[in-house]
Structure formats: structure tokens, C-alpha cells
Length: 208
Image 1 (spheres, one colour):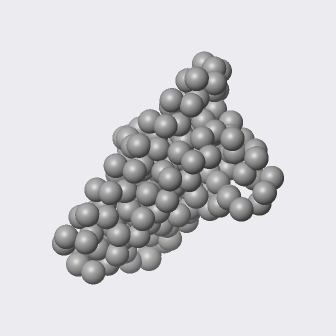
Image 2 (tube, rainbow, N blue to C red):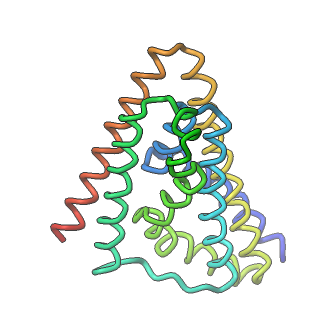
């Protein structure tokens, strides 16, 4: 790896921070999980999301080919992702913030799985991989080889983890410390946001 790859590594970290800071379904789910069950639950959801996306990024950097989804594949992602968000919204609004009672019954989907599914069924994430990450890694490979592309992928993951970690801390510490009423209304608002995003994706997928 040459010194020319260093700016791309820094850019990768900045891009990861920007990606995590942009409001989207993954951030809404992480915030909701943190509000619902504290920073422990929030970070478990973060681990599921970031490990999943990190593996996709590293695989892409090491040579895996990912095409920008279109046609039937994009419709499937929109319908499946919309259905997931609607289910999570319903589950969150029904259970409010009493995560401990649901977990004790053992019937709730674990937060780690929620985070992973939020990434795998997110059309925006796959569009980012095909349209943004793939050209970035191709350039990094030409400049610094496979090692350069790998380091850019790691920088991206670090940036995303920092940004998503701030979201979890906001929900797990900031909102929950504001009192039970703030937790309840925040949880309801996030449920409505997820439901709106889910309906939007579902309608887009079915109408395409």
C-alpha cells in the first residue's frame, strides 16, 4: 500500500460517519432498540447491523462482485424490507418499552437479528454497495492493491460504528434518562416512523 491510499482511507471513514448520520430505517431501528431496552440492547442491535454490513463491505473489497439491484431483485428488497419495518413498528408499538418482559417470555426476535435483517433487507444499503462502495474499492485497489481496498472497507465500518454508536447512546442514555413519558412518546414516534417507511417501501415495491 502506498501513501496515495491514505486519503481514501480517511475518506472511507468520513463516508461511514456520513452514512450512519443520515436518517434511515437502520438508524431508526437502533434508536428504537436502545430506547426500548437500554444501551445494552441497542449495542446488540448495532452489532448485528454493523457486523453484517461490515462483512459485505470486506467481501466487496476483497473482490466479490455486487451489482446495483434493479428489476425483480429491487422489488423484492422493497417488499421484504417494507414488511420487516411494518412488523417491527407493530411489535414496538404493542410492547412499548417493556423489553424485559418480552425477552423473559423468549418470543421476541433478538436485537442482534433485528439489526442484521435491517441491513440485509434494506434496499438503500444494497444500492450503496453497488453504486458507491464498489467504485470506491475499485479505485483503492488500483492505488494500493487489495490491502488498500481492505483498509478502506475497515475505515468505512469504523465510521459507521462511531455514528451508529452515537445513535444508540442517544436513545439508551439521553432519552431514557428523560423519564418514562419521554421514553413512551419517543417509542411511539419511532414506531410511526418505521411504519411510514415500511408502507412507502411496500407501495414502491408493489407498484413497480
